[in-house]
Length: 309
Image: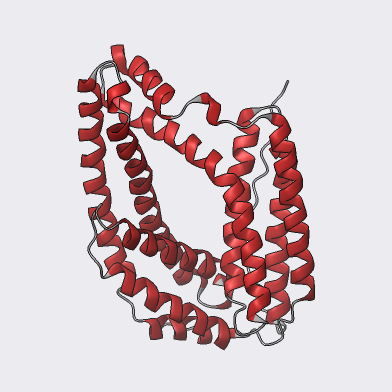
């Protein structure tokens, strides 16, 4: 059977328009539409197709949630929270699948430290112990999950059609972004090491939300400068995300060490994991310091007026 072609879609962006609220609504509805289309592939018999659908659906939901956050103050806060709760519930349905897939990829990558003659065998043992096949979901369960997710998405679409976004404007969007920028700067000021996972998670969350929001509104200001900010924030997010995945693998290796036939292989993997985490966090901290060096007021002016300082 020929593999189904993968749909590639650019993230929705707000258009420079007199009715900014309506343009924001259109962008958010486009993300819901993208997520709904991915639901079709959640019930596929082909695991790669299903895995890709999970990935793309999660991305669409993250973009939607980031954009919905810009509506705070313009619409009823209870309505915004209700939509975000639906997004969170949907994302939680997909997280276990994502974590298992990423764990397998991380194991395969870390096992590259072994000689070619033993690499595949060590990787197969590690996957069998740390990411057993029983963690996968049956096709019938996927059909049930897809139905539940589609129902939630349809409810979100109805809420967005009814939301009053007339109060949304460049000033309110700029104020929301500057508040998040200040939170990201505060979060990045704490110690950067594997012993402060909550703080690292906060930095990643704030930088990721900022990157998605700046991408969404990039056409309202100096587009090239805003897109450079997005790229630099995304680099910080990527490195902290890699550290998170390696941290998950490290914890599992320590916990399940006794189940490996050769403990020396576990020691070798742990050395590689810990070395990579140190390098990743050092790089992430340098990049965060550079991109978040700008003051929140400068970001606010950039968005509100379309000009840099």
